[in-house]
Amino acid sequence: MSKLFIVGTPIGNLGDMTYRAVEILKSVDLVLCEDTSVTQRIFKEYGINTPTSVFYANSKIKDLNKALNFLESGKSIALVSDAGTPTISDPGFLLVEKVYSELEGVEVIAIPGPSALISALSVSGISSANFTFYGFFPHKKGRETLFKKIKESDVTSVFYESVHRIEKTLESLEKYLDLPVGETGDKRLVVVARELTKIHEEVVRGNIKEVKSYFDKNKDKIRGEFVVIVAPKSGKARD
Ligand code: SAM
Image (tube, rainbow, N blue to C red; front, side, top):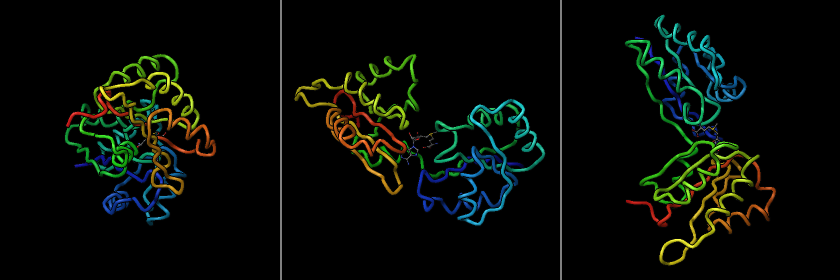
């Protein structure tokens, strides 16, 4: 029976590759990846020589069918993304869905590894008992609605942000969150986790004014990759 493995890979530090991920990437017939040169860095580090094929976020039906035919012929595939866990704000969901709906008997197996959202939550000091993950925020339509939703949210909010939009996002958060909440009048706790597992990794914590002013004063820190976490309205997620 052929198998589709969804393999987590590092979000920066190559040492975060798991033993099982290396074994699986060595043993499958084909590795589907986003960018061959990114995946080759891992292959080089861990002596992996499996053939690769590019699988884009907006993979055409033709590419999907190619992968499905490959699995149908009894061969196994591992799907990786450029960083972290495939299908989490990364390509792959449609492939997994089609395997379930079109290929009887093919197993889909998770090979867990890092994910930026879980790593960020784990060091945030904000409860993850209940949280909403928004992925990337829309650039225009629906953006303001989501900020309003976060403002009113009783659970922790988590989203991904790019270097191009982080300043704009902090501005919007200031507009919506710089308000006294709860009986104590405390302000909402915000955490920006940047470049996790990499040389310049840092976790910036504070109310939105403090976090924004840190990045306003340290423009050299507006670099790399970001996860933004906002505490619940009550200041405490439900346990
Ligand atoms: N699939 C990945 C995962 O499981 O985390 C997410 C891929 S998504 C295309 C890329 C976004 O994840 C970045 O824009 C950033 O928001 C976040 N991210 C990835 N690596 C990160 C890191 N080392 N530190 C902070 N955020 C990171």
